[in-house]
Amino acid sequence: MKTIGSVAVAVFRESVRDRVFYNLVLFALLLVAASILIGQLTAGQDVKIIKDLGLAATSLFGLFIAVFVGINLVSKELDRRSVYPLFAKPIRRFEFILGKYAGLLLTLLINIAVMTIAIYGALYLLSRGVPEPVQRAWDAPAMDPALLEAIALIYLNLAVVTAVALFFSTYSSPMLAAVFTLGVYVAGQFTADLRRFDIIVNSPTAVAVAKACYYVLPDFAKFDIKLAVVHGIPVSGAYLASTAAYAAIYVAALLFGAVMIFSRRDFK
Amino acid sequence: MRLASLWEGRAAAGAAAAFCLGAAVALRAAEDRWPAPKVDRPELLYLHSPAIARRLVLGYDGIAADVYWIRALQHFGEERLSSRTHVRTYVLLYPLLDLTTTLDPYFSIAYRFGAIFLGEAYPGGPGRPDLAIVLLQKGLAAQPTKWQYLQDLGFVYYWHLHDFKAAAAAFQRASEIPGAPSWLRPLAAVTLAEGGHRESSRALWRQLAQSDEPWLRDSAKLRLAQLDAMDVIESLQARVQTFRDAHPGEAVTWDRLVAAGLLPGIPLDSSGTPFALEAATGAITVSGASKLFPLPGQIQAPR
Image 1 (tube, one colour):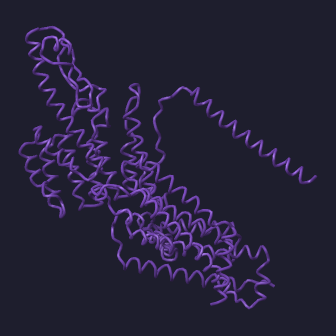
Image 2 (image 1 turned 135 degrees about the vertical axis):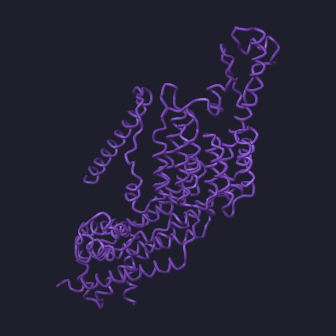
Image 3 (image 1 turned 60 degrees about the vertical axis):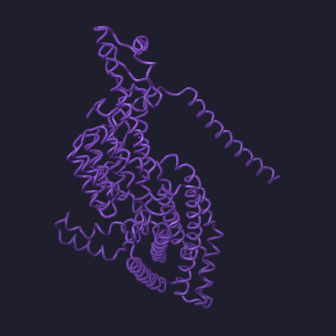
């Protein structure tokens, strides 16, 4: 456990050195500029749009970090050949993989936490001084704590994406791993369509393959409750719990797979 | 020596970058000073299918809906404020609102404001109350308990289509939804009994003028001002008739009415614009330059 922690801290330090957190500056600038401009453009929908923009940007920036840092987690060590002296130390391969994963999750957590504070800050500034009757017309209050539910699911979504990227990075080049990860991410948005494939296709084989993909591919649409939260539509605790369980199981499956592949690689 | 050449290299590259940036800025400024002749070309919407749009945005439905909503606002505003030589078509308004509300089915303002835009008489809007109804019914399909959509539906039937029976039915359905305000039920009865009467219409808009939505309040205030203008026009029309009875066959102008002592001065509507008077027929209406233009039924939209 201590070894996993040490690898995780090293990954986090490396992302700080690699200026991964510079994206936060861009995020802050985006929110500030949007807060100033949106009110002029949107016929009183500024709070809704800042929520949409904040959640979308959190998700998108996180996605880029998860994919483009995730795919390099293993390959970078191999390219630099730093993996060889590392395994001369008492580090087991599964500890290396889990540490790398935990380190990127920590980076994403810090990133998302700062973005959350920025979103609430922008919403506070926008809603300050707005008359009570106007606030009553909003679907949900500006400083709605339910936003945290959407942000929590974005984080779980990114946890799965990171696991997918790490899985592919254990056996392919960074470029291919990026293509595979983004491919899985896009396909994972359409799993509901795969389930209903029999409506448009007659071939039983194609339907069976689609159904298999439906069950095997991660259902990324499941993590998206942004619209519901922005409109103040309640999301049940059971849904949040089942989605968290789904993410945990899927991540576990991918990490086991990654450890298995990585354990078979020959570094002599 | 090597350091000096490195510095020279960097300085040269920096100077070249600054020069190129300066040239780009100068070119831009020149374009602004001598703009190319403006071509009145129709706006394009590359993506018409809401179902495909929903797939393409990969879960970023909310922000994509906001972008299309802003485009809908800009399209409506640009067409409405365009020069008189431009033929206003508002052709993209409904597709943009359809995309917006498919991407975000709970976007209340897009349904409600969109219905007002679509129903607005030409040339202030496309004059398509039929599409306003389609949009509101789409909203009701997404949120059947949203009484506000039924209230707006009632207004479209009442104000634009003069279908008082359908308007009353919509108000009645709205009043039956839990949480609907108590004034909707009597509104349904008034609409059915006194449909088409200006006073009942005024009562409807006064209710909307109490809305929490600032834009809806503004819209209701405009409608109330239009109703007031229609009252004033009626009273002015009586004075014009008095003049025409006294001077049969003569052209009638505001100046002549003032000179005849029938008016104290040229009458202005609530936006401060003189009413338009047709010299040959004596017909009065609000001027095309007025904020109240067009009054209901003043101009028909091209289809």
